[in-house]
Image 1 (cartoon, helix red, strand yellow):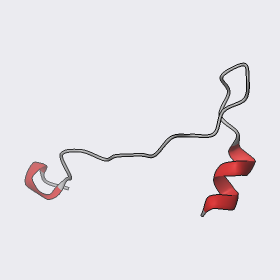
Image 2: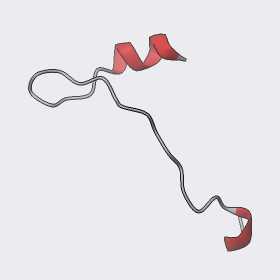
Image 3: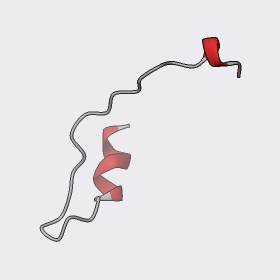
Image 4: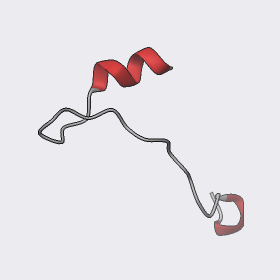
Amino acid sequence: LAGFQRPKKIVFGELPKTSTGKILKTELRKRI
């Protein structure tokens, strides 16, 4: 994509994480 066609920002909500800081991929799949 050309520069003017790309979004300037992509905003994500809070990601579910474990107590050690790893992202919970199974929880992300449930949200979609």
